[in-house]
Each structure stands twice: as structure tokens, then as C-alpha cells.
Image (tube, rainbow, N blue to C red; front, top):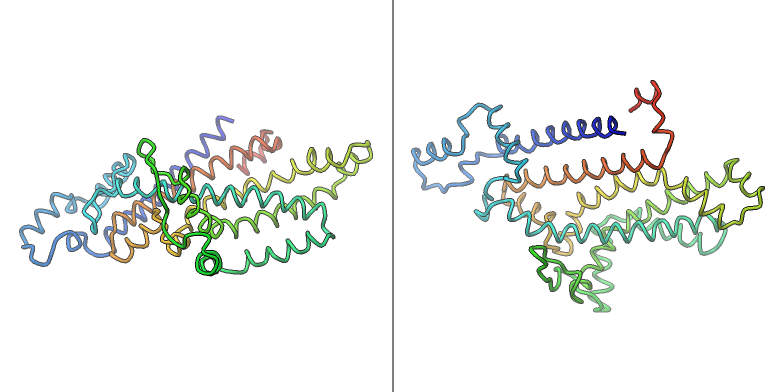
Length: 329
């Protein structure tokens, strides 16, 4: 177990260094940072002084190591657009993105597993067929179109829910949350459903397919022959084995929810880091863009590491140390 964790941690460090190199390249290949930080009236001497002060005259490897060291401490420099520390901008907007992603994931995971199990156990029923047909909507339609449709129905016509913004938030020791206010919860519903709908249909279809496959195996037939009840067979044996591949796919999808919240945050003007990244692209705000890339990569690495550990715990075959298993790992 310890060797497995160490191997995964080393792989994660390599991934983060590659992402850091890509983010660092933005500073050197997307415009001149000096031109972005000073006006046209700045003299040549002032530009040279600023370049020396920022360490831009140092060799590239030295600049990269300094960038990695600062990033490891949460320092990403000053925003070109707002002239504020990037770490402060990220800290202000990160709670909004995390709350949106967690709500979307909970919505997709809970409803996806329930509907997947139901459609597998009642595969020939009308309700199951309706659910499978309706799931095509979540798979086929792009996220921004689903968001616009929900706004048109629930905000414009029915006027039940707000169409943009985060609503009223309260400060809990530096964490600004909308979970504790009615307007915050109302503002969360449409973005969360929009962001989680694709993941829901994906999880539902995966659970259904895995459940049907497991129900056809010999040990399930043997369990029924032993006289176990349908409830014990379906939920005590079949569902447990169904969840093994679902954990991997679901974990990767949770990372995608955070990474691709950009579109949903743009449609609903949700004040998260995704919307901050879109604004940074518009103004070529390189420090914010670099910080966002590293932050999203860090989320993916952490989630994948947790998924690998869960997979290792759930599937006992991975804990058998054989030469073939070591090679595969």
C-alpha cells in the first residue's frame, strides 16, 4: 500500500511540473510582460529597471525554478488587469466554484446511481425506457444550450429562479457561502443542474450497463440459487461490484466538473474562477491564466489520486503483489 501511494505521488509531481512548465511558457510566449505592466509613456530605463526587478534577465531555468517555488507557496504574482495579488483573486472566487461543483457532483452522483440501478432492474418497464430516452437529451445537447433553455423556462417564463449571479452570501471565517441564504440556494439550482446534467446521464448509463453485466454472471445466479432475496442479491452483491469501475469514471468526471465549469459560469455569470479565467483571456492577464491552469491541474491530480486509492481499496485483486501486477502498476 505504501509503495503504491509513493508511486502515485511521484507521478503526480511529474504531472504538476509539466503543467507548471506550460503555465510558465505563457509568460515568455504570450506577449511581453513588461508591456502589459507599464504604459506606453514608460521610458527605456524604467522598462529595464522593471525587467531586472522581476528577474526577467535571469536564465530561463532559474526563472522556471523561481516560478515553481513561488507557485508551491501560492504566489502567482500580480494581476495585470486589477494590479492585485492573483492569490487573493483566486481565494475570493474559489468558494463559488467549489460550491457549484460539489452541488453538481452530488446531484449527478445521487440521481445517476439511483436511476441507473432502477433502469437496470426494470429494463423492460415503460418508466425505464422513458428515463433512457430522456437521458439522450443530457448527452446530446451542449452545456451552454441546456443553460439557456433552463433560463428561458424557469427564469424568463415561470420567473421561479434567478437567471444570473450568486445571490446573497454570508462570510464564515473567510469562506463566503451561499448555502445559508434562500437567494443563494435559489441562484445555485439552475447552474448546478446545467453543469451536472451531462455527468448524471453518463453515470446513469454506466451504472445501468455495469449492473446488467454483473446480473448475468454466474455468482449472481448461484446467489439466487442459494435462496437469497432479490434485495440481498441486487444491492448486497450486484451493486457493490458495479461500483468498482464507476468509481474511476466518476472521479474523472468530478475533475471535469471543476475544469469545465467555465461555460456554465459564463452563461449564468457565476462569480467563480472559471469566469475569472474567461475575463483574464480577454485582457491577456497572464498571471491569472497561469494560476488557473495550475489550480485545475492540482484538482485533477488530487482527485485521481483519491480515485486510485479508492479503487485499490475496493478491488482486492489490486492488492495482490505479483510481477505482472507490479509491471501493470
